[in-house]
Image (tube, rainbow, N blue to C red; front, side, top):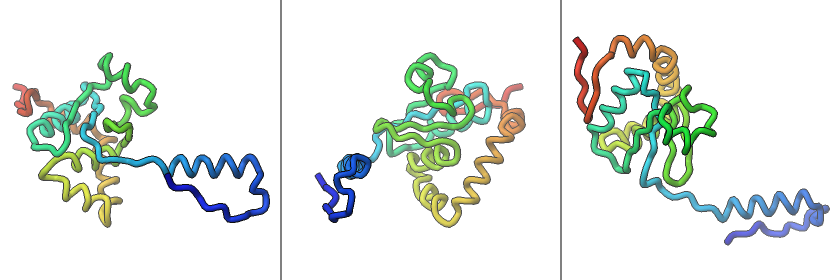
Length: 161
C-alpha cells in the first residue's frame, strides 16, 4: 500500500489534515480493473433505443453485455438510486463504474470489437463532436424513434407495416 510521505507541514496533528491524508491513502490503494460485463440501461419505450440495443446484440463484443429496460423491476431494484434512470443512457460495469449520457455512448462503442478504435478516437480530439452528436440525438430521440419505428428482436430489426 502506498502512503503519502510525511512532509512535516505545520498542523500535521490537525484532524482535518489527518483525515484528508487517510482518504488519499485509501484512494491510492484502490485498483480499477477492466470491466468484464456492462449493463446497458435503456428506455424500452424509445424505438431508437430498442434499435440501438438490437444492433449491439448483433455485434461481436469484448465484454459481456446485459441490456436492462429502465422500467423493469430488476433494473429498478439494482439501479433505482441512480438519478438519471429513465432520462439518460446509463452503462454500469461489474466493477461499479457508471457512465451517463455521452460517456455511456462511448463506453458502448468501447465494448464492441469493430468500434473500440472509434471509442478512443471519440474521446480524443473529436470528443466535443461526439458529445454534441449524442446530445442532439438524445434531445430528438422521440422524432428519431418515429422515423426508425421497427420491430427489433434477436439482433434483427424489421420495419412495421
